[in-house]
Length: 128
Image 1 (cartoon, rainbow, N blue to C red):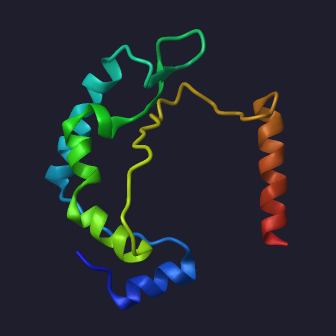
Image 2 (cartoon, rainbow, N blue to C red):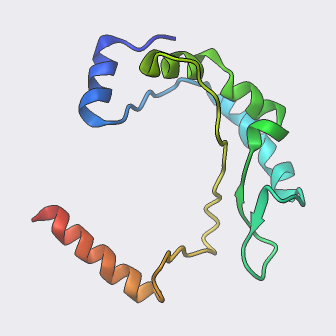
């Protein structure tokens, strides 16, 4: 797969490029089907929430799962990346951050209220 001149222009203008349907629903389903087994693994690459067995993120998926190893080598992913960068590539990280609804990432904020106040201030400056 090669990116068109228009896609390359959009990337240059917007700083990102969304390409719908690069992978089929069946191909995505293969990756999704891997998740329960990956979440169940007790290994250092599955970081857990403090004081809980809930998985915070799954790391190095391309090194421990054949479906993700194939994904990072797939021509529909690698081709455009090499076209953009013009050189050989390597995968640094394949990671999944589950959105369980149980975790609220407050970053450096002491409370949700403080995080929300900061977000309102950031949004204000983006508009003015």
